[in-house]
Image (cartoon, rainbow, N blue to C red; front, side, top):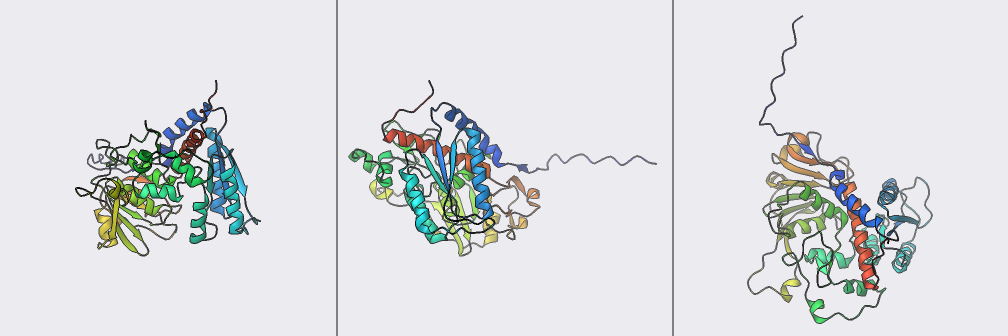
Length: 387
């Protein structure tokens, strides 16, 4: 019997796809959170409000509890309404959920609040998102935080948060602090949460932030460029334009210099960083978004072919982004529970991230620690540390 033919040598020019997991992004943040909580005399407390017993919400709540326990964060789940086992919806009324949120807002023992959506539908849920105090909004969905995101305001005066929250009575803002807020070009690097003049880091929605951190990990963001412009030169397609993830993500990426194609059922929009003209700096410029949005004339296939990065977030098992339409060497990131890319994605992509769930929860925890710090500062407290 003849010996089997030897395998041909590997093609040295072939480029294999690198798989990046959410755990890769989460690990260093989780370590830092564990170190921070170990020095605190009292554990930070996160309250989850559940008014929907659908399997995804319940599973997310259980996962949140385990993730918090692992890093030294106290987690309490508050269920609202009569929730039947196996039901897709609870029987809570909007007023009951709002009351639960307001009670947590006023509870000094609670540092952060997250609500498990969907509950009642986009309009009512959108209202409830605004009921969460910006001082306790770990998800970054309150208007105070979304306004900062869309206008690229990365540091704000914490006393403005107290006024918006309507739970504290801070001292009056000095004129300089109320009218001037540093944006990307003047703010300190992202590892710092407070500037020398008392401004604090704005809270960002945790899922869009997790995607940005994934892009930084994959070096899609250019570390040689100044902070705030590290996505310059990149073209990115985001398939999802929800108000919770897709639209804020497109704004974040374009604020950092990327050309972004935002795709949804109602068409394609193009987000690009706004160019300031001479004489437009100052107060006038601060009242315009840092990016511009216009209708895109390209087809979906043309957007995909032009994109260095494609991000999928469609909550449908049947929806697939065609591999054949993607650019060779694309970075493909999926943030939906469903897989938005076809099974052969690794044959075309240079980097593939199948999910970012662990990165999302750890950045939510980081938001919690920052908000706890802001709350203590506004109350004139000294950070409690173990002696």
